[in-house]
Image (cartoon, rainbow, N blue to C red; front, side):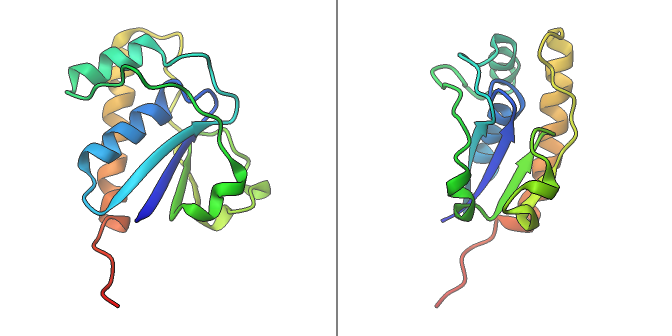
Amino acid sequence: MKKVAFVCGENACRSQMAEAIYNSLAKYTRAESAGTNPADEINPLAVESMREAGIDLRGREPREFDYESINDYERIVSFGCIVKATFPGNERLEEWLIEDPKGKEIDFFRRVRDEIRARIEILLKEVDYPPACE
């Protein structure tokens, strides 16, 4: 199965939200998320804003991005934490410059969640299709 990776600094807000939204919408592909410097826990306001959208992030933990696994992913989406020019899989890397909601109010988390969802809906049209018959 093809996979997409969502990567942010702490894997505590945007990338966790993106993974969960992607997996709730995708039919033929899966997403994973990770951070370049993982936090100890997922931001409670990320959990709350996703709960409001019907997606449960409780029980998930931030993970560190494994650069050795880059060939496992069809696409890698960075939220501004990877320098594209130096990234070994840069032909599959795209950057979504969506402001980090950390330290902001719940309304900001909701806007970030909705912007991520809108971008994922576009991404799904590009990558989420049945595997070709062999």
